[in-house]
Length: 445
Image (tube, rainbow, N blue to C red):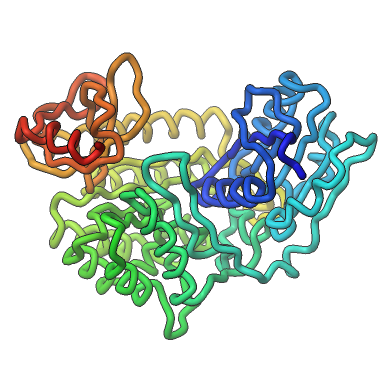
């Protein structure tokens, strides 16, 4: 009955948001809606928001304006973390018709019987304390790999973070039900699955069903060639998990481990559940048994109380750690967090200067890691996107390579020799055997 209604989506923020957008899009497609690109003048626009940074909030406003530019009569729906945290603020944005909270977004279809624009914005947003159901999901058809949601919410209340207020308590499906979702993916042509959530290491919340038991079961699923762990807290990344990944045929040597600060003083103020000694021990354990493993790090600069001496402590700690790249976040004050009440506020100019220094360090770390991979043989999963006749792909240990575009190798895993890092920071490659392309051509026929 909705076959003539076109819907477009835009996702801000994390891989978890991406998986949820894709899941909701499939729900609407199954109900008869036609998914179109954002610029194609849709009847309904759905913006899945983030609220980790102030820029994400501003981006939401910009997207509403852009959507109405494509179709002034479009029905605008806002979902996601920003929608749960600040619905009244969103309702003040001209043109927004519907705001759905953390649980309500998965029932979007029931709110689309009437998409006539009204003067008042409809807000469907229950208290986050009432959000207890876990809704699984995974992305499909958007990228070569898929992001599979295995967990939601967080029981950690870090002083800088609003995620528990936006997504509720930590929760997940059983291992058996999670495997059902994985087997759905295995029936497609997806080669790589990225496990995602808010705090995936907390899967099972400490019961007999835990993250370690989950990945052991996932490793046995036929039809999926690679599993990648998106991000995991250092206190939940046990030595048995590290050892399992080192010996797994499917879980790839790549970890993203939030650090936030290299100072025990700030880690305590942030209410993190580890110290720098534990963090360092995890890095050393990984590198001892997987020397070529890629390790990404989250770090926050400018948190209240970060003196010049404390920042230098973090900088030197990162300099000495054998990690591969940094995700640098400039601290921004968020309403309803403990950190906003803290004194010793770092000036924004200083925050930006420190952020720039860490981003430069990240580029150096990344290039050094890539250089260490030169002349190595690796298997690359090639992406569909191309630009100026060049395509990219990723090795199992997350080195981004470049090759002349060839549609025959899109979504195929092929062994290559990594030759050298170019000036753009990408890895040049050589196919090991010339007959590879002929064999791939036969596979596609």
